[in-house]
Length: 348
Image 1 (cartoon, rainbow, N blue to C red):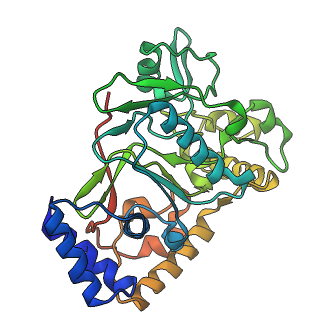
Image 2: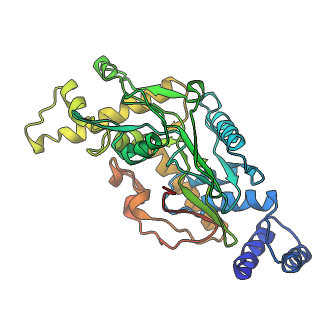
C-alpha cells in the first residue's frame, strides 16, 4: 500500500468531485485504520476517466468524462469473466453507435492474454502469412491451448482468461457479437473485390490501469477508431496487411517510380474507403482532421481547468498528412501522470 499515492489520488478526487475537507480526512483515516485501500466504485470510475485524460498517446481525450466504467472486481470465475467481457463488447458496440467503456477486474488476480478483445489471427504458411502478422505469436499460443481457427485472413481470435495461477481458459466470441465493416470505395468498385473488412470496436486489453498505486492488470477499454488506425496502419503497414500495392494496382498508379508518390495516393484512397464504409454502415469513426480539431478543444479545456497538458507528439500526430494539423507544429510535455494506462508484459 502506497500511502503517498493514495493521499495524492484522494486529494485529487476530493478537489474535482467537490467533496469536503472533512470527507478527505475521514477517508484517509479509514484507509490507515484498515491498512488497505479499496477504491469505491465512484473512486474507481473517477480514476479510470482521469487515466484517459492523462493518456499522452491518445488524440481522443476530449471525451474522457463520457467513459462508462464497469466495476467487475468481485468476479473471479473464468466463465463469468467471459460473460462480462461479452457484455462489454455488446454495450460498447451499441449497434455501431460506439460507447467508450472500461471493465475493471480484480487487481493482481485476473489476466486477459489478448492484445485486444477482438483481433484477427495470423498464420504462418508455406505461401506466407495469412491474416494479421502482428497476431502470429498469440495465434500460436491459442493453438497450443487447443484452439483452431479456419485459416482465413480474418479469423477472430478467442479470448484467453487466467485467474490467479490457474491454467488459462479460452473462449470463442460468438460471431453475432463481433460487428465488422466490409471495406468498399465510394467511386472504385474493385476495392470491394479485395474482400477487406475490419472490426468496429478497438478494445485494448493488454494494458494495465494504474490509480492510487494500484495496478489493475485486466481492465479492457475502448473508444472508437480514428480512420487512419485502420487505413494507414492496420491494412496499410508493410508488416501488417500490406494492401497499398493492391490498392495502387486497382487505381492504375505507377509503382515503378518512388517519385510517382503511388504509396501516398494509395494511402489516401484506402483511408477514403475506410471512412466511407464505416459511415455508410452507421459505425462510429472519426477522420484525423476532425480528431485533431477535437484535441485542440481538449487542450483549451485543460488550460481553462488550470491543468498542465501532457502528450506524446510522435503518437498524437496522425500517420496521414500530419503537417496539416496543428499538433504537428506544437511541442508537448511527455510527462506521465497517474492515474494512467501503461504497457505490461504479455502473461504468456
